[in-house]
Length: 363
Image (cartoon, rainbow, N blue to C red; front, top):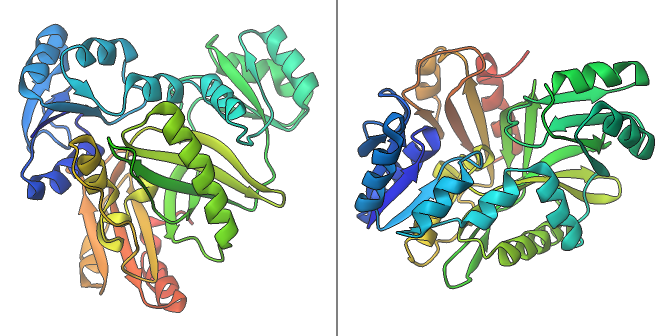
């Protein structure tokens, strides 16, 4: 099939790399000539907006997207001509934190206390209701820690609101969690579900730096609970493709933080560490192919993001059971330009390899 991708970053790149062995072809909407995916298929420049979307509609048998910040109105228009997966409903809800929280409440999925904020007076009322410490986030467009302000005392309220630049926001109670987890699942057109194991994510300055897969010491009941939450959302959204939920593990159980209607950074380990990667399963789902098995092929796996600079990647290439993935992106502060997948037969071996990758991890 001809698969159109709205966006041409590293996620589109990895979708294409997983889809070509299945005999699919790819086209991407781009904003410039040097994006990660621009050499991996046809490109349709978004600067010529109307023409580019007409072109990708003419090319594609099915269309998907890289980011939850994709314009819903564009997806609505495209879906009248060609099937788009995930659907506009998944996109509409996931790109707005207040709508996400409303979905969690509707499905009885626990999350942090929260309240919509549209003004300084709204924020003051929300602080009274939720109490401090709390975190103020933009309702839309925030990612990798951007658009967030942690409020510890009342003297910070005005500064927090000013940092939002008047944008609609949400105040969430700050969660006292043991660790951050994520669950990636995929749902096919005929309602088949597959789940990957829960993974542990370590962030620095709001950016994911390391994922441990599967997460250590996960009680089977915790995995089952997360899958139950996921299934509720997949079915409510009639979602086709990969869906990711980010969670907090607390003393009282799991709290869902947010969702992403797409392949996810915390699932990059699946390229070298699972029978079927998240990228291949997304392609299988949106094209109507049977879903692949999600079982890990190694007992211990990890993914390390390469942020800002490539570093001495020859060191990585010399390491056994270690795989380098670069995205053909220019070096820039805080930019994700690649990742490293590490597989091991023991926890000690995994930790030893991660120690060798210290140049890529925050000090």
